[in-house]
Length: 71
Image 1 (cartoon, rainbow, N blue to C red):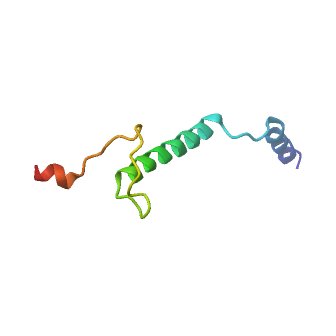
Image 2 (image 1 turned 180 degrees about the horizontal axis):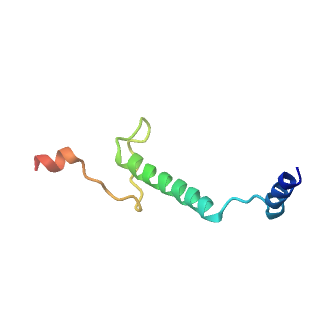
Image 3 (image 1 turned 180 degrees about the vertical axis):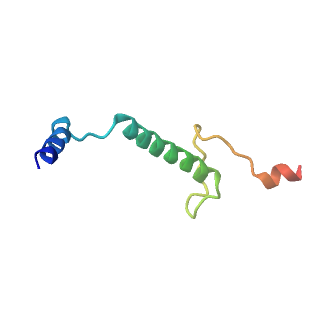
């Protein structure tokens, strides 16, 4: 019994913490997903009500494969 209490006490003394590297991976992945999704949305057909909106200057123009294959 003493061995179990001693082994359990070591983990409590160290404390449970989530490594910073994992947190950074999740944060950077979320930001990348939002940026890539925004670029894809702006390059897709405009939803109703957004047809007259201009493309923001920071969003690159992506050519359609069908148009480039026909040329």
